[in-house]
Image (cartoon, rainbow, N blue to C red; front, side):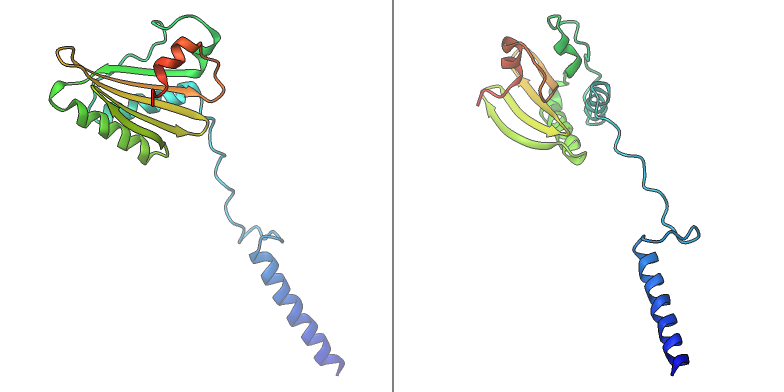
Length: 168
């Protein structure tokens, strides 16, 4: 009787060890899962600016202006990532929509979308940033695409903020 009980206890213990090792409760260096990948890197202004410029170029837009030099001075410049460029008239609207599509494929979510007269508006969001995408198709004035990302909580002067945010 004692022998059966010992065998039963050993079987239960082996089963428990298998279950707890499989759940990660007990570490077995030979069968331990690989360490988790590095945490998601911070989504900084330079990272956002590079992402926007890369997706715009990949969608067929020529290189754009990413400087904040034309904007008024202020601490808020550090939480804004602008990109502005002139699009070839032949397929400017298509290049703009392709840029928005690439952004969406990389976790930017559409917050709002509409058009008024000669301007198409798309607002997207990702990881604490809003991206105000604009396509201006003004007759006899060329085609301009503006992609301006603003970090949530950024204190932008009201006059400038009005230029970025959706009028709707």
